[in-house]
Image (cartoon, rainbow, N blue to C red):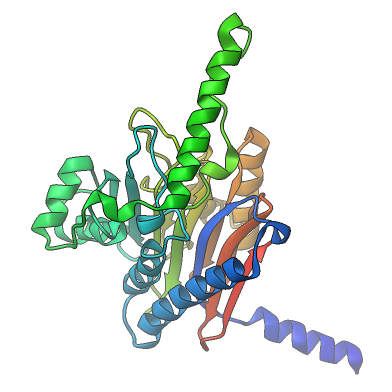
Length: 332
């Protein structure tokens, strides 16, 4: 009798259908380094993002609407490396990237290197819906955003003390490295501090019509130089959605996600290799790990199965079921 009860419980758990998942970045996120107040702030922000996204799904709006609503909350919070909380480049600027993809039509939109758009994810959607293009960058993307009536802010809006201090520490490390490398024995490549690049936010959603969508937004990497762009605005790398397989949003060391076509790779494993979403997403993260990259991803398939693998100490993440049950997690 007990065995039968266990099987029933396992079956019930297996049949849980998710309609929304989010991430707020991955990295060395340890409870021992987290104050109670900061932990509560993260949980509150992630919960709000899930609630705003779920409200769209519940009201019968599209998965794209849900993705925008959830990511907008995180872009407006200084806690995450996207929008208001974006990190600084080597030149002391905030350069923002974002993308969105519709799993039904495979239409997509992306922006990179924008500096005055309050919510880059909205501009990415405008590129998808109101232009014949997929990606726009820098001043061109900003001009397009203005013509679409999207909210424009002074670059100072994105300035936060925490991110500015992070840049100063990175600049000091660069200076020390230059002084140590005078003998030419060290590598010419600058050191990469892992937790300077993992604040990307993202959302994947499944609406009542059975359509998937994925969105990703980031401020990039602290102290990035030379107009560097990571995976977040690149369709197939940091973001991908296809109704036949899944919606995927990534966070981590962008160069590795680009090199492995990480988000599309998950979809391809599902479509051609007949893997499930959990197996496919884990395999891609494992591959990235073997190459030396860190990070994670969220993936939601067309049946409402969710996977959130990561190879770091933690990843800000959360889910909502079709019944509205919210779950937020931070640590491994």
